[in-house]
Length: 560
RNA sequence: GCGCCCGUAGCUCAAUUGGAUAGAGCGUUUGACUACGAAUCAAGAGGUUAGAGGUUCAAGUCCUCUCGGGCGCACCA
Image 1 (cartoon, rainbow, N blue to C red):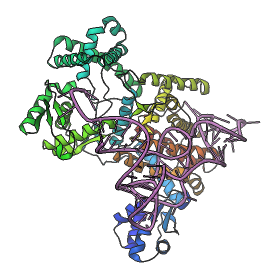
Image 2: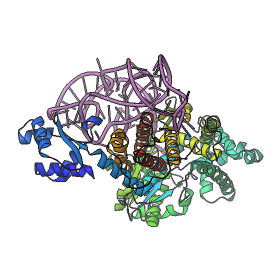
Image 3: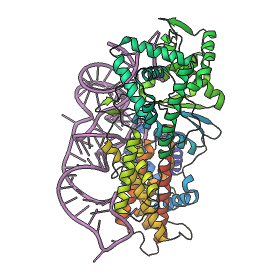
Image 4: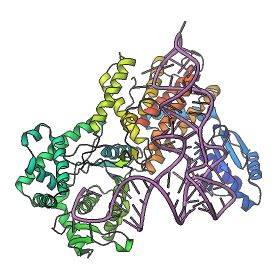
C-alpha cells in the first residue's frame, strides 16, 4: 500500500514509528497537491523549526520509486504517486479480483447478528421500516465483505399490547368479510379508530390491555385472530422484501420469545435485580442516572424490554455472536442503553457486543409520522411508482431493451434505496416522494446509468487482451478515476467500521462523476495503441460500480 | 424540567473524523447530441458553517453558554 510506503519513508527520516506517521498522513483535498500529504506543524515545536523548513528538508531528502514527486508546499510534504505505475497496478488488481476487490478477512471466524427491518404485524410497511431494512441490509453486505458471518434477523413486531387493542377493535367493529378482502388496510382502520375512540374513553384502553393479557394467557379465540393477522401480514411483507431483494436468516419475532421470558424473569429475581415500583417489576438503573427498565406490568404482562432481554440471550446462545447489532431508529436509544446495562448487571460480559445502530427518522412536514393517526406513506406504493417511472423512461429511451420489466424493477428500486442510503445514517429525512423518484444527479439510476454506459463500451470495444498496462497519458487523463479506484478498499472498510452505508453511496457517486467527466473529454473507443489501456480503466470502473452498488443492495444492469 | 441527536449555498446533502482556497446534486443562467448511451457533460451565479465565548500552530469539526428544530423520559414498541 502506497500510504504505508510514505509513512515508512517519513518514519525513517524522523526516527519515529511508522504507525505514528501513518496516522498523520492525510489525503489532500485538491488533486494538484498530490495523493498523500504529511503536515509538519506538530513537529515544529519539538524540532524548534518552522513547519515550512521541516517540510522542505523532508521533501529534499525523501524519494521512492512509487512516487513521481515528493514536494514541500507550505508546512506539508506532498507525495504524488507515479500515475503509470499505480494506475496499472490498480487496474490489474481489479481485473484479477473483479468484484472481490476490496474484500478482507478481518471478520473471519466471527459471527454478527443483525436485527433489521422488524415491521409490525397488522400495520402497513412504512417508510421508517424501509430505513431499517435497507441500512441493515447494506451493513450486512459490508460485514460479509469483511469476512464476517452475518445472521439477518427480522424481529417482527408480532406481540404486545397493540394486539390486544387490535383484537378488541375487531371484536367491536370488525367485519370478517371486509377484513378478509383487504386485510392490512382494514386492520389499520380498526387500529386508528381504536386510538381515536380511546382518547375519549378511558375504559377502552383497559379493554385493550385485557385482551392482550388473554392473548398472552393462551385464550384460544384471541390466538386464532392473532395467527390470522400475522399470516396475512407476513405474506404482505414477503412481497415487499421480494421486490427489494432482501432476505432474512430468521423471522423469529417477538412472539417467538413468549416461552423464553419466564426464565429471564427468574434469573433477574435470583440475581436480586428486580424491585417493585408502583406495582410494576423493574430493574433500577439509578447508578447510571437512567430511568428503570420495566420488566413486568402490574397486571403481570410482559413488556418489550423483557422480550429483548430474552432475545439477546437466545441469540448469544444460538449464534455465539461476537457482535449483536440492532438497526433501529434513534428514538429507541434509551431502550437499548437500558438493555445493555441490564445484561451487564446480569453478569454477561458479552453485553459489550450489543450495539444499537440508530438512524434518523422519516419526518413529514418536519414531524413524526404516526400510525395511530393513520398518517403514513406506504412503501409499496412508492416502490410501485418508482418502478413505473423507470419503465416509462425505458420505453422512451431504450424501447428495444431485453428484459424490460426486470430492469425497470432494478432501476426503480435502485432509486428508492439509494435515496435512503446516501444520507448520513443519523440524520432525519424529510419525506419527499419527488426526491425519492428522482433519477438525475446524485441518484441510484445515475450510477446505474454510468455502469451501463461502461458496459456498452466494453461490449463494443471487445475483449481486453495482452498485458494490462496503463500508459502515462491515459493514466494522467484518467487519474481522478484511478485515484478513486485505489480508495475503494478504504471506503469499504470505513463504511463497515462505522456501520454507515452512506459512505459507499458517496463513493459510488464520486466514481461515477469522475468517469462521466472522463467520458465527456476522451473518446474511449478511438482505434489507437492506447485503446487497450482505456478499456482496462473502463472495465475497472464497471467492476467497482457494480460491487459498490451491490453493497448497497442495488443491482447494476448492463443495459437500461 | 431532564437526557440524547441535529443546525453548512434558495432546497437536499458532503467535507479524509482537528489540517491547505468549505465541495456536490437539485433549482436557476449559458453552452454541448451526423464522436463511443443527453438518466450525460462543460461553465456561471449562489457562504459571517445558527450566534457568542474558549482550547489549539490550525476549528464546520473539540469544550461551555445562548437560540432554533427533532426524539425520548413507567406499564406502547
